[in-house]
Image 1: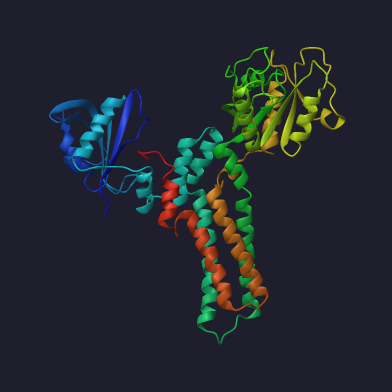
Image 2: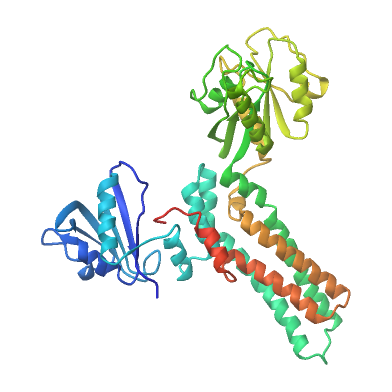
Amino acid sequence: MFDTIAAIATPIGEGGLAVIRISGPRALAVADEVFRPVGTSSVRPSAAKSHSIQFGRIVRGGKVVDEVLLAVLRAPRTFTREDTVEISCHGGILPAKLALDALLEHGARMAEPGEFTRRAFLNGRIDLAQAEAVADLIQSRTELALAAANEQLAGKLSRRINELRDKLMLALTHVEAHIDFPDEDISPDTKEELMGRLENGFEFITELLRTAGEGQILRRGIRAAIVGRPNVGKSSLLNRLLGHDRAIVSPIPGTTRDTIEETANFRGLPIVFIDTAGLREARDEIEEEGIRRSRQSLAQAELILHVLDGSGPLTDADKNYFSEFGGKKRILVRNKIDLPIKLELPAEFEATAVGVSCLSGQGIEPLKDGIKDAVWSGEITAEMLQVMVNSRHQEALNRARGAVSRTIEGLRADATLELVALDLRIAVAAVGEIVGKTTTEDLLDSIFSSFCIGK
């Protein structure tokens, strides 16, 4: 039996409302201790009907903390499938904190990060993939990321994973039946049918793994570093791409002395832009540290926007950038096209360079299209959003695919069925991890520790 937990479920700070959530077997009794109904239509939480709202006051130590609305949600029709109370008080740090303190003084325990969602999983309300979708939903930075999280929360990915697990379980049952009755070998027809089923499973896993890259992009975005020699317009380009002034712009070279990061929604994709300090010989310790941080950000970037001054000739510093970032995906941005063009690019770069004017905004929209095409090719369809696997799913699926591959090879080589069954069990367990049918306490701790307290 779980104990009763409580936490503030809304961000700390000043606002119109703050919500405190209580869940567990004594949620109603704890709420009774601190809630005083006001008016003839309101009652104590323990006497209230499920899914009803009561008006009253929270009292602590005989003093009124706040006027609140209190929602009573009785099990099992709740997020956690436990008795739940949600208290809406006035926003601000003090009212919510004092109300929470009152609940903790009367038997509730402070919830750990993600503990409400963890209980929803442990009580069978959602599976593990759906639990992760709750975090994705909260952290969504674009409408596409939100749509993908909602599809996963609705169980679209879970249904496909469960179908795959069922097929692998059927194959395992078939193999283990032959182990239990060793006198009856697997007939050629049955063996071919079994291998065909496993090959279909292998292809299914491969298809799911193809969505891993897109899923990572939607969840965390693409890191795009803006590089170039000092005073070519890197900060001006960042401001134009974001649509507001984020970086200081000055004709003095070396103005940017630290990396600046900002996320923008580009055609539905989250792009994390990084404005870097110009990579030149540092003039002081501060600039040296800025350049060190720039190089660190550049190493982590998946896309490079190399900015060049179109109003001047190509320099040795520009050429160094060509070779230094030759191994990364990049877009050459020829800035200052509103001035007479004097920059001549090497032939291999001329056709793909994008011309812009950070002063007038000319060419910025085509550049945005180029950035989207560089990180995501083709259309983003509703079907794709249904099965966006994350890095944990990807690792489990890779283990499952390897085990299925070994199973197929073992059957082809007439290996002992005990070895074949061992690999199949590994595949079934790996696939089961995705939806939580095979879990460890460490795995659950790792997943739910990344949630906020109150969720």
